[in-house]
Length: 488
Image 1 (tube, one colour):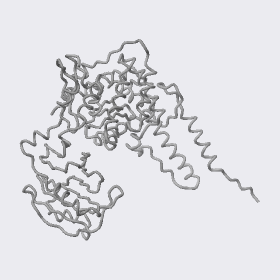
Image 2 (cartoon, rainbow, N blue to C red):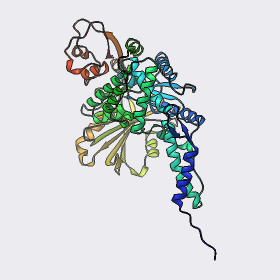
Image 3 (cartoon, rainbow, N blue to C red):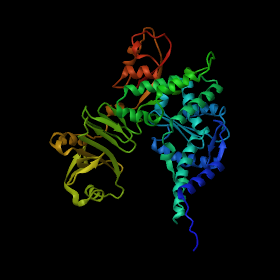
Image 4 (tube, rainbow, N blue to C red):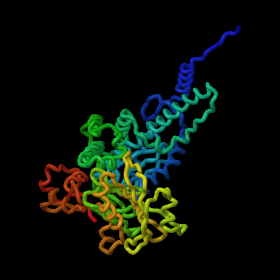
């Protein structure tokens, strides 16, 4: 009788993983520590290049201001030359979104948003943000994240091989979500430490990082929860801002003078769009304008409006009534009813009727069965409206079944309010801009903030973007200093 030998699968896998760890570790030039490296430099470059178009598309495109793009590239290049990886082709991109954010991909792809540029107040602050993202690349935090994901897959696949299943790992399929997922607390703090070294070598004021993080923290504190999630986006996954401020302060050398280049920075962002771009649609008060597509619609004053890349969503306080606006193309010249029946379950359409909205043919139809949105059940009715260039605008009206009588007329009024822009609305629908002005004798934050072309938090936003203390809003500012205001 022959002996039977049994293999402990978990020990076997651990042994294989240990071999992989030992054979794939290298000293990182930036951190001085041994790191697991599964991605080669070539693979890192390929990941960044492959995901770059997806990032641009996901964040409303590239801001079309070549002079400003070149200015940010110049700052980034200066920092890169004082980093450990200056020999790759770095790419610096301004994304055309009001969201305040910055991030980097493997291979030297660094992104800052237009919203972030509006929050910064000098070149040293932007240098600190770029240096932080550059540090994520030089410290290979993105590569480590990919390595961890890959090792997880390898472990599963070794187990599969043991039991006779095929190996299916494909590192190229990790995708953009993996690229942009949150770094750990220790990785963020390590990037902070490395970035301070880079900006000191680049002769920038290292206190720029402290000033910017304070401003980011102040902005977050005045926003609603929804706005925090939108404006702060990926920053919300980083360590607490004040914690980072304290650690950054402790890393800055004392009694050394560096430059912040405030005048140069403010000149660079003068006349930059603030908030929504007209090419993506503009929200002003309770109205949504789109000057390029020539339409506007109105929601009740108590509704919140969110402008997404592919839709506009509006809702009341308790979300018992919701409006989702988007568009379709009708290249086949189908009737509106044919489009409705092809996009929805025909047998579920309860009733429909034709009408005209601003002289355009439209239909509205109801559905028999409720739909689920964000985990809640709603009754849905839909408007399809013929527009120019084979476009069809769609309003999906959702109402809580228990509050149908209260809100159904209100929702219908939103859909039927859409119309071509008047000459006055074409002016109202223009985007806001940042304008740099010099203070005059007797100017105070309170006085200047009243000229801000925004509807809420005028004094707070003016104080934050200019690095001023709101508590001293009536204090007379020195004559001739440069400040940012938001104009239409």
